[in-house]
Each structure stands twice: as structure tokens, then as C-alpha cells.
Image 1 (cartoon, rainbow, N blue to C red):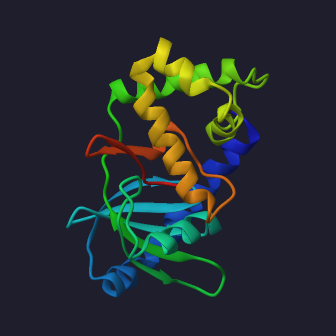
Image 2 (image 1 turned 45 degrees about the horizontal axis):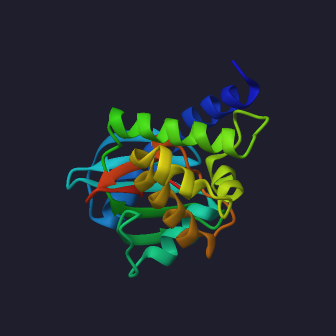
Length: 193
């Protein structure tokens, strides 16, 4: 196990345990009932009984993007219903729309597109962030290549570029990978950024 993976596992266990004791107060604050944990990363995401996501996070990027989306919805992001600062040490609670994860077919297309972007930009490192790959292939004729050779990848590529372009006004880099996407109204939706 890699050191950063081990650190993440320990941090997530700690966060989940710590947030569990504050959850009743947070549920009252937001008028929701948590029914299960969806996942942990730079915080913890919970599913509520009314099918929304209650996210507790310290991610500056997530807070900035969510703040900008509140009252200004985009088809590429979940609707943000409410956001509150939880503590003075940088933790926030965000109540947002629940978007189911993408299906296996869309994941396959995403991986195929990511692989083509790596080849096109001649990335030496397979773990390069998809956000960086999008920047590297923009304005290089990559879209022409997709239109001619791989038209089934065009929509996902277009959605990814639109997502990145919208959020680039607010944050430098997004956490773009297949596990952070859902599918709504025939478009990718980045629900964890």
C-alpha cells in the first residue's frame, strides 16, 4: 500500500468517526436525516432520506465552486441548496443534489478518451491528471481527430471541456476522474470537485 493511500485511509476513518458525533446537530441545522455514508475524501459525503447529499468538507476548491454554483446552477454540476461554515478551522457543510454515478458504458468511454488524450499529449506519466490532459490537448487539433476517428468520444470530451472551462474561473484545478461523475440529462455532471 502506498504511503499516501495509507494516510488517506487513516484520515478518512478519523474524519468519519469525528463527524458522526456532530451529525445530529448538522442534521438539525440542515433539516435532513442522514441514511448512509456515500464516501470520504477531503471530507465525508452522506446520502439523506430526501435523496440529497450532505457533504462535510475542508476543500477550498469544493467550497469555492459550490459557493459560485449556489443560485447559479449549471447542467454540469449538482444543484447546491445550502452551504454553511461548520467551524472556525475551515470545515463547511454543503447540501446538494444527489447525482448517481456514471454507468459502466460511460466509464469505458471516459477511460478510452483519457487514454487518447495521454497519447495525443505524449504524457510520460500515466497518472497525469485528466484536468492537465484536457489543457494539454486543447487547441491542438484533438477535437478534429475525435470528430473524424472517434466520434463516440466527442460528447464526453465536450462535456469535460465545458466543466473545466466553467470552473476554471473559480479554481485552478478540478478533481476530474471517473468516480466523481454522474450522468443527468445526457451530460456528465461533476458531483465531487
